[in-house]
Image (cartoon, rainbow, N blue to C red; front, side, top):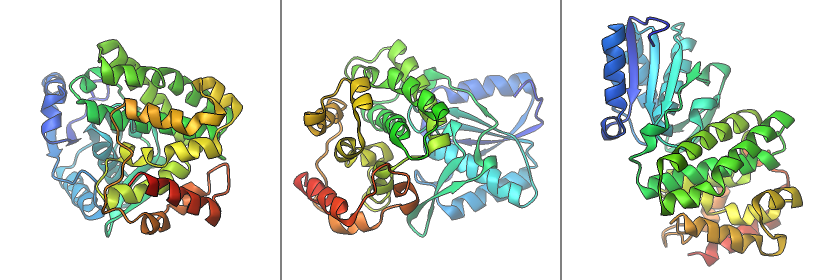
Length: 326
């Protein structure tokens, strides 16, 4: 902020988490240095709604801000990205700086933003959705509890692995993917069980590289099937992705990937389930989950990026797999 000397900033932030993570202290210090005026926006849902993004755009335009700064988790970053994109469509442009407070979504490094329209999770993709600057400050994640750490961390790991096998993968995205896996796969269970600053730092960096990977390749079937578990049944995104991940690890995996992770092809489902359990994430679905109905609400765009074509027979087998966990 100091280097570009903004006069007025729209600060998109979390609610209580903004103070708890140390974000308020950092922003207050920057305001003291730059004498920048601040307009804050935090009155939006955990899963950002389209109408809330419109309210954010109206606040941004009214404030005459010349920069947008986002401090928060994936939903906060998505809201800031939506505001910047939607305001630009109206002729109001501003740079966007993103400071993640969770290690997992990779939203600081992608040109996608999630928004809920009429209760359904949608993804918007555009060049101006990508933040101009990402500041990964791992200290913001130090106070996150075990469940939040597990959900966001597994989301990052899933992104890295899905990017590795995605149809849309390139040499560059696979390099980012392997880099992310090297910072997440072994470290994440250790972080959940015995958290240290060093592990927090590594996982935060791994989440960033996972974001860089999917910014090129996009995600695949586990993400495609996950959205309804969040929008309809309230599971945090990373936990929602975990439900189908063992199934697709078997379906999509290959020897190179299994060797990279130290897994055995003949027991890969069990190994993946054990890994997820080690993070404290239960694979048992709520009784209220309508498995057949949930599988019909798949994101077809993400599904098309899966390396194995997901036929009706595969979807049926996935349904059987999920039903076992009810």
